[in-house]
Amino acid sequence: MVLLLALGVERSTIMEDYLLTNCVNAAKSEQYYQMLLASGKTEAEAEMVRDVFLAKEEYLNAAFSAMDAQYENVDTFLRDGLHIPQNLIEHFKSSVL
Figure 1 (cartoon, helix red, strand yellow):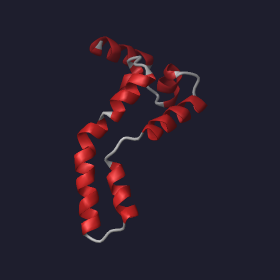
Figure 2 (cartoon, helix red, strand yellow):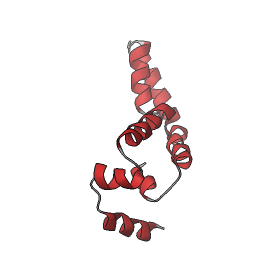
Figure 3 (cartoon, one colour):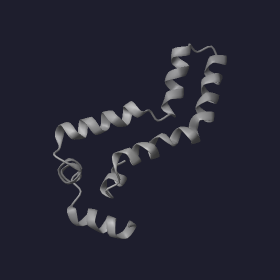
Figure 4 (tube, helix red, strand yellow):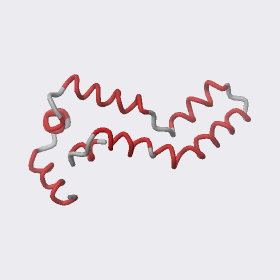
Protein backbone atom coordinates (compact mmCIF):
# COMPACT_ATOMS: atom_id res chain seq x y z
CA MET A 1 0.00 0.00 0.00
CA VAL A 2 2.69 2.50 1.00
CA LEU A 3 4.70 2.01 -2.17
CA LEU A 4 1.61 2.43 -4.33
CA LEU A 5 0.61 5.56 -2.41
CA ALA A 6 4.10 6.98 -2.92
CA LEU A 7 3.71 6.39 -6.65
CA GLY A 8 0.43 8.32 -6.69
CA VAL A 9 -1.79 5.30 -7.38
CA GLU A 10 -5.48 5.92 -6.67
CA ARG A 11 -6.95 4.29 -3.59
CA SER A 12 -9.52 2.36 -5.59
CA THR A 13 -6.71 0.76 -7.61
CA ILE A 14 -4.77 0.01 -4.42
CA MET A 15 -7.89 -1.68 -3.03
CA GLU A 16 -8.30 -3.79 -6.19
CA ASP A 17 -4.67 -4.84 -5.99
CA TYR A 18 -4.95 -5.61 -2.28
CA LEU A 19 -8.04 -7.78 -2.76
CA LEU A 20 -6.28 -9.80 -5.48
CA THR A 21 -4.45 -11.42 -2.56
CA ASN A 22 -7.56 -13.49 -2.06
CA CYS A 23 -7.27 -15.03 -5.53
CA VAL A 24 -3.86 -16.36 -4.61
CA ASN A 25 -4.54 -17.28 -0.99
CA ALA A 26 -8.14 -18.52 -1.03
CA ALA A 27 -7.30 -22.19 -1.58
CA LYS A 28 -4.50 -22.14 1.01
CA SER A 29 -6.66 -20.41 3.60
CA GLU A 30 -9.50 -22.90 3.06
CA GLN A 31 -7.03 -25.77 3.40
CA TYR A 32 -5.82 -24.47 6.77
CA TYR A 33 -9.41 -23.91 7.85
CA GLN A 34 -10.36 -27.51 7.07
CA MET A 35 -7.20 -28.90 8.71
CA LEU A 36 -7.92 -27.01 11.90
CA LEU A 37 -11.52 -28.18 12.01
CA ALA A 38 -10.36 -31.75 11.42
CA SER A 39 -7.89 -31.41 14.29
CA GLY A 40 -10.67 -30.48 16.69
CA LYS A 41 -10.37 -26.69 16.72
CA THR A 42 -13.57 -24.69 16.97
CA GLU A 43 -15.04 -22.99 13.93
CA ALA A 44 -14.14 -19.60 15.43
CA GLU A 45 -10.49 -20.65 15.90
CA ALA A 46 -10.31 -22.04 12.38
CA GLU A 47 -11.86 -18.85 10.96
CA MET A 48 -9.30 -16.67 12.74
CA VAL A 49 -6.43 -18.61 11.18
CA ARG A 50 -8.11 -18.67 7.75
CA ASP A 51 -8.62 -14.92 7.87
CA VAL A 52 -4.90 -14.29 8.44
CA PHE A 53 -4.34 -15.31 4.82
CA LEU A 54 -7.14 -13.20 3.37
CA ALA A 55 -7.36 -9.53 2.49
CA LYS A 56 -10.48 -7.75 3.67
CA GLU A 57 -11.70 -4.44 2.38
CA GLU A 58 -12.43 -3.20 5.90
CA TYR A 59 -8.79 -3.73 6.91
CA LEU A 60 -7.44 -1.46 4.19
CA ASN A 61 -10.24 1.05 4.73
CA ALA A 62 -9.27 1.19 8.40
CA ALA A 63 -5.66 1.91 7.42
CA PHE A 64 -6.78 4.68 5.07
CA SER A 65 -9.07 6.14 7.75
CA ALA A 66 -6.29 6.18 10.34
CA MET A 67 -3.97 7.86 7.85
CA ASP A 68 -6.61 10.45 6.92
CA ALA A 69 -7.38 11.20 10.56
CA GLN A 70 -3.77 12.05 11.35
CA TYR A 71 -2.35 13.47 8.13
CA GLU A 72 -3.39 16.16 5.70
CA ASN A 73 -2.52 14.09 2.62
CA VAL A 74 -0.36 11.22 1.36
CA ASP A 75 2.76 13.38 1.07
CA THR A 76 2.44 14.47 4.71
CA PHE A 77 1.89 10.86 5.78
CA LEU A 78 5.01 9.70 3.95
CA ARG A 79 7.15 12.61 5.13
CA ASP A 80 5.94 13.14 8.70
CA GLY A 81 4.35 9.82 9.55
CA LEU A 82 6.87 7.45 8.02
CA HIS A 83 9.80 9.90 8.02
CA ILE A 84 10.67 9.24 4.39
CA PRO A 85 12.69 12.12 2.96
CA GLN A 86 11.15 13.81 -0.08
CA ASN A 87 14.27 13.21 -2.16
CA LEU A 88 14.01 9.47 -1.49
CA ILE A 89 10.35 9.47 -2.57
CA GLU A 90 11.26 11.35 -5.75
CA HIS A 91 14.13 8.94 -6.45
CA PHE A 92 11.78 5.99 -5.95
CA LYS A 93 9.20 7.49 -8.32
CA SER A 94 11.76 8.20 -11.03
CA SER A 95 13.23 4.69 -10.70
CA VAL A 96 9.87 2.95 -10.96
CA LEU A 97 7.83 5.13 -13.30
